[in-house]
Amino acid sequence: MEKILKKLAGQLNSLDEASLIGLWDKYYEKVQKFTPSREWEEDIIILSLIQSIRWKNQLFNHCLSSRLPDASGEDQESVRPVIRNDVKKSAKVLHFRPRE
Image 1 (spheres, rainbow, N blue to C red):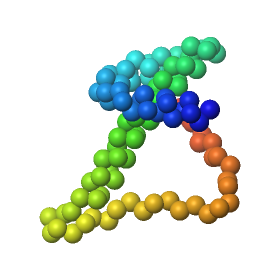
Image 2: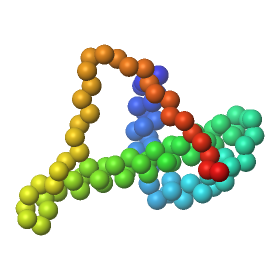
Image 3: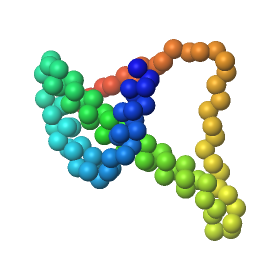
Image 4: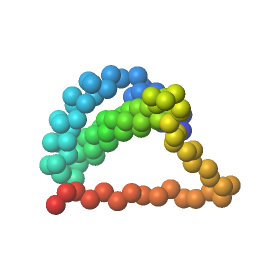
C-alpha cells in the first residue's frame, strides 16, 4: 500500500499546480451536491488531492523563505522539526465540518 501511495504522491507532485488549481472550483462544486455514490467519493478525494498540493506548496514556500537570510544577513528562524519518541501512536482523524 505504501508503494502505491508513494507512486501517487510522485505523480501528483509532477503535475502543474496552476492546472490543478483550475480544477479546484469544478470539484468543489461537485462535492457540494452530496450523493451516496462512488463518484461523489472519488470527487472528494480529487478535491482533497488538489488541496493537498496547494498546502504542500504553501508549506514548502514558507519553509524555504524562513531559511533565507534577512536584510541584515542573518538567517531567519527556521521551522523546527517534529521530534517523535519511540512510542507509536495511532493516527488522528481530523473532523470535517462543512461551513454553516
